[in-house]
Amino acid sequence: MMVKMLRVPGIAAILLAAATGLCTAEGEPSHLLTGRWGFTAGGFAADLRTDAQFSFGPRLGTLFRLEDATDFTESESVIRADGFVRFGKRHAFELELLQINRDSRGTLDENLEILDRVFSADFESAFDMSLTKGSYKYSFQNNGTLDAGLIFGLSVFDFGFEMAGSVEVTDPNGMTTTGFEREEKSVLAPVPSAGMFVDYAITPKFVTRARAEFFNLESGDFEGRFIEVRWTFDYLFTNVFGVGGGYSSTDMSFSDLGEDPLKVEYRYSGLLFYLSFVFGSHL
Image (cartoon, rainbow, N blue to C red; front, side):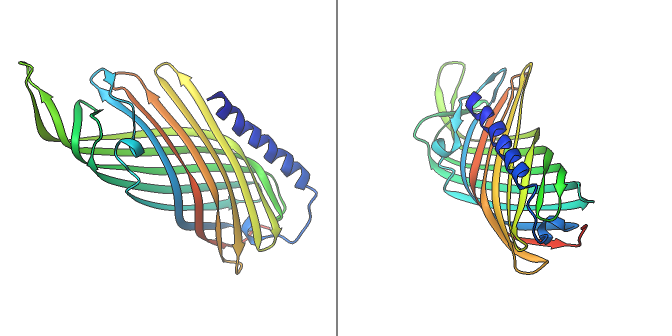
């Protein structure tokens, strides 16, 4: 855990050094770094790992990894979009939307305790995650070739989990029977973050972007962690339209051990690919 938390500030320090070294760079401005507003839309080839525990009365149920316990790699759909608006050279607001839906069905290899039920044998399950993230960006410098500064964000994760299947029920006399049950759980987890970004126009049409954000807080029964690293490349075919792709990694943990205990650790990383559109200019 400590290694992970030190790694992101280290990446931010590298970005700061890179931005400092590029400050003297001169070149023809890129519309990607000077546009007034724009958006991207595409997909995300994600490698997902999910550890979850849900409440069982006053205690947590079994800690389980969805990809191992229920083979959630069987069916996945990922949709991603984001947009930005610039207010002068130094200020910008970003909005990101990500939806990951996964379904699975089959036979459990071992009993799985979720909420107040013990599932066994055949099952059907769904696990959905939607992310809405708003970010404010402050640029130390934006000359159309280099845009570098600080970023402050708020990510709201909305998790929805559903499990249906064979359930073992033990009556007061100690007799165990098997029946069909369905359990659902939804979780809303707001997580702030802070970090640094560097966008550099290698040519007016070819731009590389890098960012690193993190957050860590422990207070009473609550514990939250957020780590995100992203590196992408964009190519403009015209001043308005282009394509992009790159790598993104997010590691999020949310734990509340209060009256209704809950713990979710969600990690996803993979390749981004998208269409990009940019309009207007502030330079």
